[in-house]
Image (cartoon, rainbow, N blue to C red; front, side):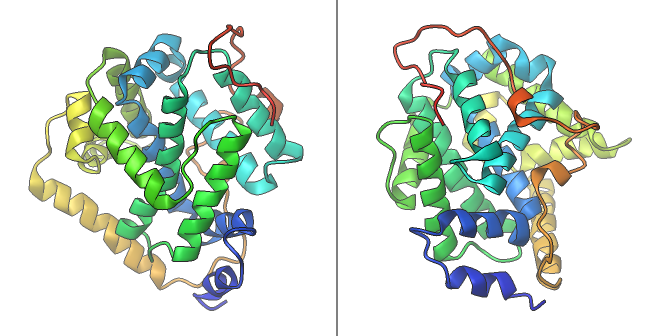
Length: 293
């Protein structure tokens, strides 16, 4: 197929009504690897907000069962992207998210911030490293996709445009990024997990490369020193070269989902969406997620 096959398909769709189809094409045909990396970094950023990092560190799930938490998060988001939000496995995945979140006293502001990272970080990643930047159609569709997901998570006061999400994320990070022992522990566990995916010296190199991809405020929040500028240029340049290489490939004929990644390792015999995640005892809170999808 021509390289612009899916781009032409996206242009024929309406990002205000066909946002799920556009997002699915972008994430599983146009940018499957980049989407996995970008969403991983989006979630990782949230650990630098103490109210989030402390909670994740306290549960022990992200420090003691890091691979399972990575797998479950990817597979839950995978189910929503593949099956939609209103039926079947997609609906069950949202129900699982709501029931997990409902066990903890998480503020609406933190929920809005986390949602903003899933809108903003992928666009910034694609613009910087993918084989092409997000198109305006994809930006609008992604915004509408996560607005729809946020509504099903009962998040209040969701921004309406990408620009509003971007301001929310940047302002929230400027006000809240700070060192917290729990957030640092979750960060270290995550970097160790990423290093474990590669043999020998590639593991430590992956960890150093990950630090190079962080912006300075994020590194500072975790207490990491800025890397050698030359090494940072090599890492970021390498990703841009990968993007230029991918640009030469034909369009994908089959979708690639998160479950197809070799880094998803916890379910060699398959899984049920209803069994993913954690099952903590529900605690009454002032801002409880209803558990409805």
